[in-house]
Image (cartoon, rainbow over all chains, first blue to last red; front, side, top):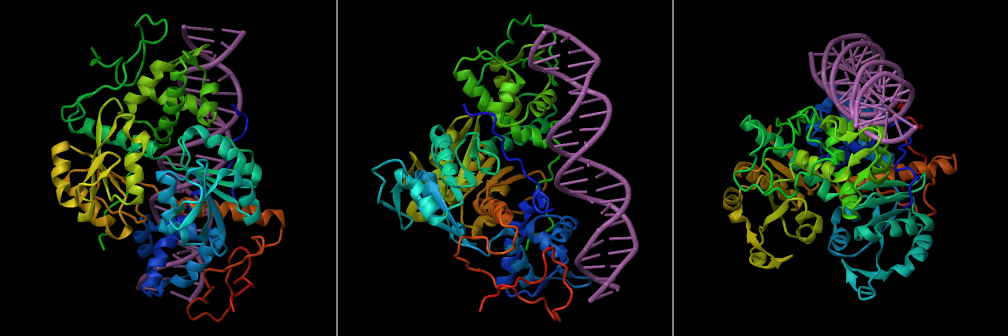
Length: 264
Length: 264
DNA sequence: TCATGTGAACAGATTCACAGCG
DNA sequence: CGCTGTGAATCTGTTCACATGA
């Protein structure tokens, strides 16, 4: 099952912390908006507010890039836009392939923010022959047989996987074999890739589950009781099985033993 | 422009670290797969491999939930599925509204992993009257006028925003005013929400930019030179502007001054 | 004997608070 | 004087390594 290959070694880039890199696009977006409104300079306080972070963090982030501000004044918007774009590698053209043109793949193909900022959809690829040739967002879908050829000819290094989970690892392997070294994975699977290949994961279901966790906690706080979170509709989706060979003895879950409410 | 409201206070849940919460869905998925294959028990090592994390981390994560394993043996799969589901609040039903039924909204509505795991699409909402009544993924789209009514009647506490960026904040405000306390935001904007409301952001463009950063770094390492990253097609999307009132003097960007290659 | 559970060491990220400079 | 830039303190998360107990 292809284990033993690491999952994002996160090789501490050129001194720029990963957390900072993840915020640069946020700053860039805020700066671009300012730029469009012809705002010449901005303070760390203002920009931080626009980007939804605190100003100390923003200043520290920028300090990793160099000293691009002017004390007593702030940052020059245009200059900063350029510096961040360059740092992120957006001053060059990045051809991208999207594999799996279902609902999601089609939505991604049509996504505006995609085309902007130096990313260019080099090809849409789907395994279904019925899709081949059909234009999606103005781009004709190509059959997956063409995958390797496209990647090599266009020098594609970024691939987007929007296939069903079942085939994501195969697709990933083919992408990597053909030369792709960065993958954005929308399929709900853990992908194994060799060292040197970056994978980022976008998973709707995980995000919702995290929200549900916090939501549940909020509900539990209103009344300080434990269960009884929803208004009334309680539908336990999973039965609480006894642990193997359990004698029903000690078990130190943080809020008591197996919950009182059990399905009939 | 609606500042002053915080953006995810991350109120350190019930002792369970945020990073751990974010991994629980991953473990749950791996465990569910094992469960379907009727695997009775699993070791931290095996499960960690399946979830793409290291085993020490997994054990520490589980230790926050309680002692659910058996020394010398491992974890009981079914029992752990139940405990994690409960911890995440997935043993109850979470009605969700999706606002903005464009390409992306439609894709989300049809997303399988949505319906599973206790999440139920309570309504699809769009501002375009032409969409009203049209079934998407089997659910008829409702007009945004109905938004408040739906949220209150169905007790919806989770909202998904898939609108254009321009209206996302307004939609967010309406959702919050109507009682939604968790928001999954697909629009490329920073949302301001009052305390007590959680926002999670999913942003394709940001993910791609992060990948591009690392990709660029890789390219820069192969040859130890600086620019010249792509094969040949270099298209600087942004001109490097001089800083305000600059005399072209000292500027300590980490790899030298303004880049040598300037657009004509 | 084996794999869990966890203190302790470490690493990374955030925040504080203020020196330094325009 | 105001705002940047940054050392130092703090907080959060990860990894190590081993005592513990089935």
